[in-house]
Every structure is written in C-alpha cells, then in structure tokens.
Image 1 (cartoon, rainbow, N blue to C red):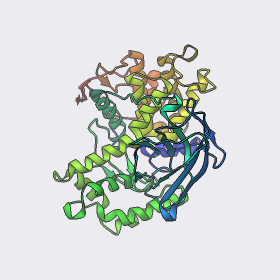
Image 2: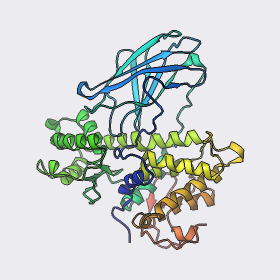
Image 3: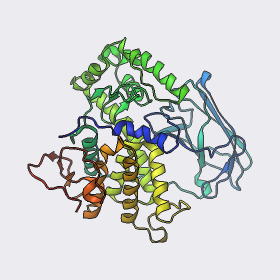
Image 4: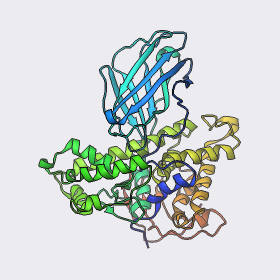
Length: 436
C-alpha cells in the first residue's frame, strides 16, 4: 500500500538540524562563512580582490558590496555571485546588470562592459524581497580578464528530467504524476505543505510560489491566492527573524481555505498554466539547478548520478546534500574535497555514486522516523547496479533497501510503478523485489 505523502518532506529540513546546519527555509541554504567583511580576499583563477563593504540593510531593502581589484590587470566585465538567506529572492537589476538566482545564490553579470582598474574599487548595489538585515555569504567575483571561466551547467535531457521528476514524485505522492494541486498540513511544524516539491508556508518557499504567481496574475484576474500574501508575509518575517520553521497557519486560516484554494488554483483551467509554471520555476531554482551544479562540481556526468542528486536536494535540501558529498569524498579518500572528485586518484563515477547512496542511506536509517522512507534510496542503487546510467531503460521501483543491503530495514510501502524512458508510466501487474 502506497503512501499519500511520506515524511520525506520534513526530513529535508530535519536533516539540516541533524547535520548541524542552521535551518533557514524550505529553499536550499547558502552556507559557509568564507566572506568576512573587510578582510576576505578571494580569487577565481588569476583574479584577486578584497571585499571592503558587505552590508544589507533590511529597513532600506538594499544591499551594498564594495570590492577592490587587487590583481595585476583591469577587470573588464565582472560577474558577482553571493549567497543570501534561504527564502530570500534578489529582485532588482541596476543599470548595466542582469541577474539569475540558483537556490540561495544570486549571480549578477554585465549587460555592457565595465572596467575596474588595478587597485580601483567598485560599489555594487542590489535589493531583495526581505526587510531583515543580513551579510551576503560566499562572495565570488570573476572576470574574463582573470583567465578563469565558469563551466556551463549541464543538466538532464528533457526526457531524463521527466524520469527523474516522476521517480521523485513516487516518494512524494506515491504516483509518478506530479501533484501540483496537493496541499495539506502534515503536522510537521512547517505549516501547509504544498504542490510538486512540498513547498512549505512556514519555511520560506511557498511564499516564493505565490509571489511568482502574483506577478503573473492579479486577484482581479482570478488569482485566489493573492489574498494570502499578508498572512504569508507575517509568517515569513517571523521565520526569517528567528531562523526557525513556523508551524502556525492561523494567519492564513482567518483569510480563507488555503488548501482548497491551492488545489483550485491548479485545477482551474484558466489559472492552471500560471500556477504550474510558478511551481516549476521555484522547484528548478531551489532544487534542480543546484543539483545539476553539484553534479558538475564533483564530475558526476551521468544522468543517473544527476537524478540521484536531484532527489537528494528535494529530500534533504542544499546543506544536507553538501554534507553528504563531503562525507562521500572523505570515505573515498578525497579528504581535501578536490573537485572534480570523479577521476581524482582513480575514483570512478560508479564508486562515487555508490558511496553517496550509502551515506544517504545511513542518514535515513539513523532516525526512527526517517527510516520508514529508506526504500527511496534503494531505487537509485538498483539502477546503478544495472548500469542504467543514461536512463534509456525503463525505471521501476521494485526494490527495497533490505534487497540491496544485509540490514533488515523496514518496508516503506511505495506502490511499484514502471517509468518509461520518455516519462510515461504504468503500474505493473506483477513484480519481484530485487536489487539486481
């Protein structure tokens, strides 16, 4: 018997506490303290610079970064990337700049040339959607004149992505069909859990969906979720100021029936396209793109590895995945976290993925509640053993953790589905549990 909604959604955030990282929302967290104001000197290839000012004044909704070019050549078209708190969105481009956001990393690039001479300083301004002050993390400035290039993100093909999302949807909703209309308070301390990726009202990513939806469609044009923004904002401000997940839904309940309105927003043929597009956008921003970046970083080039990392991002969030990759590298002797790891000292992609799966298995097994979803990870191990690296063969979750490893793990109870290489799926009439 399948699960309508398993506990993986709160496991994603519970793991952030388990690994000792600060909980900062359903969106992946920008971690690390590498950017020390006034003294962080960092470089990419030959680039050299010093960050002399790094502030974000919440009362003004305005951030300032000042850097000095301490290199030997002038910068001609700098790119500025930095981390913001989870749940925060960069939302403004100064003249001459344009930005993208992947998870909690905002990357600003030039739309025209800009020269920053040797020993010269440049003041960069940005804004976000939060009125809570913070310090940007992991500030990285790159420039073509420095000789360094940032590798492009290489993701899954359209069909491979369909397969990856369908398999994750089994763990989330017990069906390969993505459930955009889903909304429920699963009593996990994070308010209402919603949609295709379990966007939470109490952890900073459900509000991202509604903000996107509001930008596409007004209340007068059928957006019945717009009325919840005051309540969502109240909850989100409390979340941002405390760093703690918010269980309260009363701010939404006094306005209307949140779960019914969420479902209606997708089920209504007039509003469906916009509501679906916003869920897809936020899911890609917080989970898919960061997962592809993580795969590229460690040299995991095969579709199966990328699919496994994508599911881990949905399940554990950015901080959880980074903890898992660190543990994976250490277990394989890459204690220096050399990237790419695949190819380093003979590490193969199969060995890297196997160890990553095992480390994730151990995290799931370490908690008496989380272990109930442990069969989730066995599916990726079966695919690895079968060598279905490009996902060209059908994917079937007819495997339990106890089939792959000697420990008698509990049975998670997911309904067995067969997902074809083009993303279409069916429910097999018969099957045999096996990891081979």
